[in-house]
Length: 199
Image 1 (cartoon, rainbow, N blue to C red):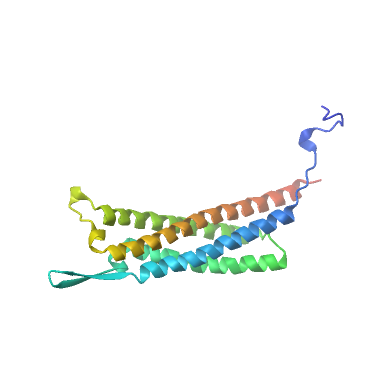
Image 2 (image 1 turned 45 degrees about the vertical axis):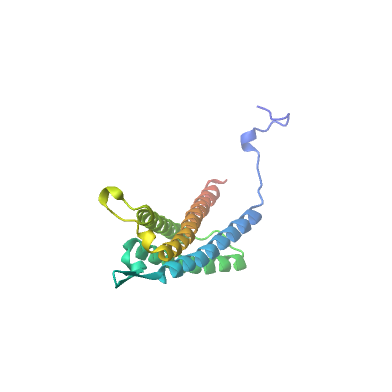
């Protein structure tokens, strides 16, 4: 079958892509996302971890703090872990950009992929659990006679909400990073396959 009168099949036409530009853009995107995770992860942990409010009820003082809700403790720990992990991976990313090397060895690519997957799952689970608790705190559950806690502790709930919003962006960034690390891993396997099958 001829293709435009040249006699070459469209499936065998060599295509050359500028992979250096693509590699650099991927690395810059990864570095920006890791910086976002570091900044917002620390912000979420600080906002929630330092949050407290004292309310006086019938001459008794009750202090609301983040340790009263285990989901908030989980959220603080998850964001702290994500920040530290992203700091380490961000430094590795900077080193690889300086050396001009993007594709790692297979074991290292698998380790980065696995780490990104684990952190993505942990941060998404922490945000989902804390979000569910926040809904109960804001709206209550009349069927179970659970009261609206945020009516009593408004400042506490507002600061938790700000931390939860930051944590949501962290989890979204971790999901995007896990997709990038999956792309890098499969590209590494594809590059090695092409080398082994070329004649």
